[in-house]
Image (cartoon, rainbow, N blue to C red; front, side, top):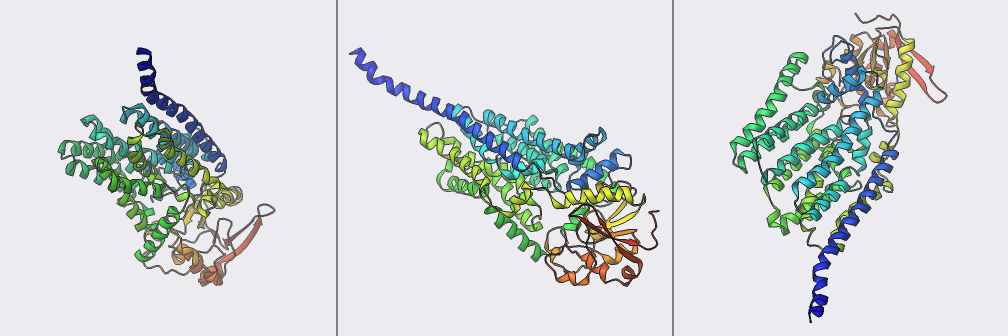
Amino acid sequence: MPDDIAETSFPTVEEPYSRSSLKKRCTLVFCLLMASIAYLGVRSHRSFFHDDAYITLRYANQWQSGNGPVWNPNERVEGYTSFLHLAVLTPLQKIGISPEGSARIVGLCSYLAIWSMIVYYSYKTESNQIRRLTKMLILMGTIPTAFITIAWSLGGLETPLYMLLLMAATYLFTTFEQNDSTRKAITVGLLLGLCTLTRPEAALFVVITITTGLVFYQSRKISLCILLAFSILYMPYFVWRWQYYGDILPNTFYAKLGTPLTKRLQDGFYYLHTFLRSAPWPALLALASWSYTLFKQSDRRTISWKYMTAISLVATFYIVWTGGDHMPAYRFWAPLLPIYAWFIAHAWSSQADTATFRQWALVPATLIVLSMSQFLVVEERMQNARRADPAAAIGKQVGNYISKNFAPNSVIATNSAGAVAYFAPDHYFIDMLGLNDRTIGKRDDFPIRTHWQQFPGHSKGDGKYVLSRHPNYIILGPAEGTVANTANEKKVNVVWFLSDQEIAEAPAFVSNYQLKTVPLSNTLIFNYYERKQAATHP
């Protein structure tokens, strides 16, 4: 009889153990698959480096040269968006690391830190080992394996750094339901301060976080600690930049948000629509998980869930309101990937320890399949991130030619403010799109006359103002320049902006400038206009 009892009771003890052991072994397999996807993703996007990264790099170059954080010496205009990114790049530039190398060091270090944070957060927030592993797999399968994340880790801008800091701040705040402390609140405040130093719109999330502390946690202490920590870090910088540049907001804000609201909203909703259709569909997965929690998991509709909902909604409204972005790989949506991933993990990791093996494996396996689909699904914005940015590649050649052949301290008007200006550091530039020019950036009465003005950040210009500065050289259209032709106003296949059109129509331009054409390679012709009586910058 004892043998019979042992024989019949043995499976009921061993079965949960075997199921748990199988889940642990499969976790390793899933992790290897995700790492392989990430590696292949890096290889697929290794050529991508965006032209706008050179704008911040030029500021870093001027700063480490002793001119201060400026685009042109003695011209204090805040044409960059991320001060923290600039502050990190400047010492890397000073020790002689290549511009692309320094920007990618920051991006890839942030990317690796995201992987580490996923592991740390999963193990700190779950006591059950299977739940820990499940949450880790879901977060890994959504954030670092997304090609949006990988592309911008290599693309040279502040996106991965901002994603890391926003993820750290919001994820830490979601742990307040388990335990809160003054130290944790101070840390959240400091992280939010770093977020706002990286992207000014992060101030919206500061408001949401403090409000959540007051309304839901009903703790003035938590909210006050967050506010004080944030203020101690951010307010000295804010006062300094206001005094240094003379504007409350960066010049990029005025340059990019001058488009009429109806046009911005149209562009913003289109930007949202195309992102929702892009593999691996993280926003749709998050929406499905959020809805599941809303209707099926009453016990999971926690304060953290409400907090993350507010973060997601406000961020979405803001991105749509700004009109989105023209760059590849959905730069503005990338920092929200950790928020989307949180909703998925919140909904499904809680069931991991009681689910059968097939039920448990379904979610991470689905995420892996969707991640692999990124190699097959062709979408224009993502495809453009798998090749070199033409403006950066061509601008580098043009900038090097200008550096070698134009007289020092020449004044050059161009629409391409990135590589062209960076690789010609001894010259002064007029940014005809206004990101680095206060007069153009703040122009209010501008008409929409060309096809290329419809892209966010490309709507402004001022040909009369540009000519009033008597530039030595004018590069119309794209980085390599194009020939002045007022008929370009109606052309879709010719890169042509408002300043170009107004300059081409001006009698002063026709009489004072002459076309120069220089072959830079077998396939690249550099077209520019030289002033007949050139003068250098005073």
